[in-house]
Amino acid sequence: MSGKSVVSLLALSAATVLGAAGEGGLEAVRALKIENGVIQRAETVADSAFIDRDGREHRELPPRTVVRLLLRPAEGSNINVEIWLPAAERWNGRFLGLGNGGAAGSINPAVFIGPLRSGYAAATTDMGTAPNADSGIGNKEVWKDFGYRATHLMTVAAKRVVRAYYGREPEFSYFSGGSTGGQQALQEVQRYPEDYDGILAQVPAHCRTPLHAYFLWNYRIFRECPFTEAQEANVIAAGNEYMASRELPQTAGKLVSDPRCTPQDIEAVVALALKKDPTLTAKHAEALRRLFDGPVHAVTGERIFDGLPFGSTFGIARGNLYLFHWVFGKERDLMTIDFGKDIDTYTAELGPYLNADNPDLRAFERRGGKLIMVSGSADSCVPYHASLDYYERVAELFGSPERVREFCRFYIVPGMSHGPGPGVNRLPDLLKLVVEWRELGTAPEGLAGRRYEGDRPVFEIPVYPYPEKAVYDAQRREFRKISGPRGGVGRVAERFLPPAEE
Image (cartoon, rainbow, N blue to C red):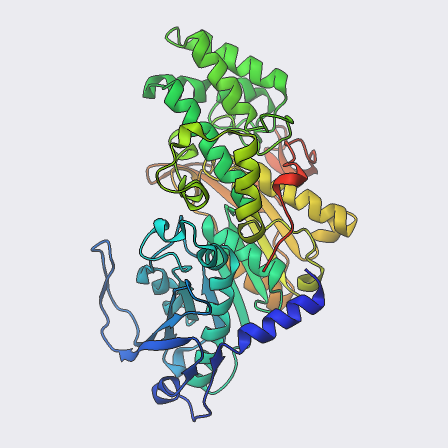
């Protein structure tokens, strides 16, 4: 997108919320006039306890003002936004945009608790997909909202509310999101580089339409050739065992920290799985080859997405098929969608709105923006490889990974699945790292990757920004940093990443 287009769109979007002059506080917020939208609620909440939508009680919350907006920038669009504002004396002077997850469609107020306690004025959106993912069936306005528009309009509106409430603009603005929130994060970096000073994109689902083609590919394979839990466990163990010789002593045989592989590696892991589990058949073997290789175009053979990472689970690698309903309707049998003409149609319809794969981050870099991306090596829901390849494409545009590292760093956390959890987990406060990098110039280096069994720490290893990696010096009993290999993943063909549209 050209600089002129960005400026024009920013100006158009900024006009959707018109703030009335005031002296700040709740009444100034209530006096705001919203074009193509309405303030549905604006009230101060003094209760120190809060029960989230899952029934969990959170205590000792500071007072906050809660604002809810409904934005309708176009017929067929319905964007809900919620904003939490700490009392003026507790505000840290920063604004924080928060991402959603999955198909969105609702707002979970629990996401505000941590930011509120830290003094952030924060906002999130349902991305325009309420009441559920079916809202996008045949509705291009919902595609735009879910892809990029809802997040940007939320940001513009929320900053107006912040200014009205506190009587001044935020000093810095940040965005934090994971999975779908990572898509939101990278759309902001690429389409609206002026919105945020720093961005955290965790397990980002930015390569959106190819990712959901991967889901469909896997769904069909598992429908045609089911695996038992025991068989799945043996396949995972085979991947861990085969890749052990490439691991640190602390991780060998326990996880796969770098699942990049060749066709020969795939054959070796399949053979080892068959050896480990005699219940696996030749049909299972062929299914595993297709799963590990990933989807390709049925006619041209071009790469749509890479495959299931070694050492990752099967369950979260399928499902999430609502995007195909958006294009082909709810009645279409998904087993009949072909990976030729149908995938071409699907890509052409949704790709220009949903995908966040433009490597040109120069406008964000020029304004001093800082970006941290994080993926997990064992994430089969949003595999690491699309983000690794995206980083490489950004490096190609800027000339080198070293040049990109000046404003963007990408971490692949060994053994982490779709976010911190069992395995290598409990990452440091990544948003804090973004803030310190942007405001203090302190660039992040190694993260502490901790492996737990229950609450018991098993080991800790350093995780360096790609393409650096840790090796272990057995004599000195210490880790050291080296330059690791680059690339090595299947690159999504350009035809499946059409240019962005507004």
